[in-house]
Length: 527
Ligand SMILES: [Cu+2]
Image (cartoon, rainbow, N blue to C red; front, side):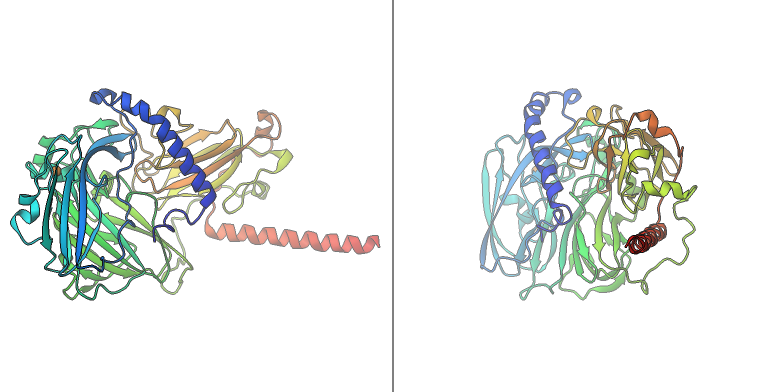
């Protein structure tokens, strides 16, 4: 399950990227270490503390008594690109590990508190019948360990959280996760399972304000949040985009850590076939549900089938919260099913302002190939639509200006790098968000942003608030002097839609067939 998460498409380039990221991170460690004193000098880049939504055990252990060890740690992490925050964690991630038990199982629970913690931590699991859900037995000062045992008495999907005073402060800093107690005999099999927990963060600075952000007790107490996120980071489920295939059945274990908000959990483009309200996995599910309420300190288990390809967008349907980070994507890959869903006429497709045939040599469906000696240069357009860049890959020559136009109802960015980048903002080749500023700029609905590429190379880029939006531009050296590039074609603006891509592919095939026919005929004449 885990292995085909991110590594499916481009193993070589991804592996290379990861090696680079690791190298950069390692080299950067001393730098980070020197800068942790004082908020003003605090590092802007820190490790990702998000729990991956696919990182969960597929079944409970078969033994009757299990040992679960949780290490509580206070760790610097990345709340958004360029925004760092000290998360309080179980096992170093937010949410903490997905704990999968079976009804009747005995659990020996160890709570270890890291030596460098600044305070005590504990656990209150809603799955536990007993004083404080375990918190009475588990208040643990730094460098200490507490142990207690419980029996998982009732099947269900439960939130666990830290319950050390001030309890809501510990929860607001990220100390929560899900504990599943499966009924004897287990849950029905599905093809994919995901683990997602919503939570709010209350920072001293406003949403998107860069640099180190401290917890604001005042804002948390007033319930005036700055961030609402899934798996602790803005605009993601805590990593790349999980993939499922058309026809597969999907289950999402969704929790709400809160501490304050109720979530109206919804998947854009999907219908929940079954919802186990409030985590009641032994009750009959309700069926065909659009949006389900998940209380703070509660959960839900939803199941549905991937019937058409596309992107499912996970949201809290209190929708302004997508502007606060609560947005994640699962991609469904596979063949279209036009009888279920297909376009007949789309009035809002990307505009085509000029389609001179002479310019067609500069592009294909995903790659614009420069035509050798003529080396046309000028403008290329990239649409930002449906939380994606179109095209996602573009090859241009030096001197080309690329213009991105946002057609989505929310703001986006065009920033060199990827979600895992550790490159400081001022070292990025391009960044529409103007990373040097205290707060990032967005390309708003209908607005455009341009950049002229002057150096050959391969540039990955992404959207800071929606880091699963990734794309690549390859810049080739020009055939001659840069001035050559401007002659000939001048400016043109072409945004390709699917139909045009097919049309151009067909056109190309016709030309090839015609050339082959001419070639064959002239060959015969020669003989
Ligand atoms: Cu705690």
